[in-house]
Image (cartoon, rainbow, N blue to C red):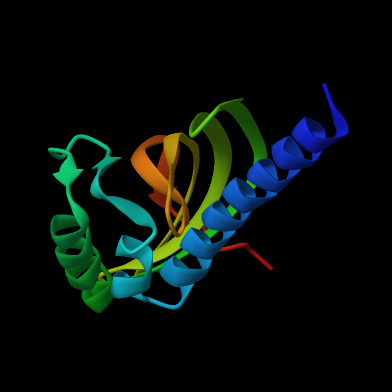
Length: 142
């Protein structure tokens, strides 16, 4: 791999990692518009057993409703990326705490992503959440 190609590879990987970090930041901040803007115009998001959300408007509307009623605090890590020109795929792992209807919950799982390079940078073409565990948090006994 030439030094120019290696530099491009590193820059693309870091930009994609930053996309994922910005997503988690938007979720922590309850920034529905910011989170939706990280998706391609025709991007999709799949959350569990619900029908996929398609397009920024649908993603934003779902996040606005979710953020108004709940508070999610995702921690994303162990990000694996496979580059293929202006597209890429990736998996990142999730540890999650959430407050839903006043109940504290904890979870873990992963996102399977497809990324696309657009004029203004990398975006999510699709994002699929798989939760391996999501349950009411237990209170430590003292």
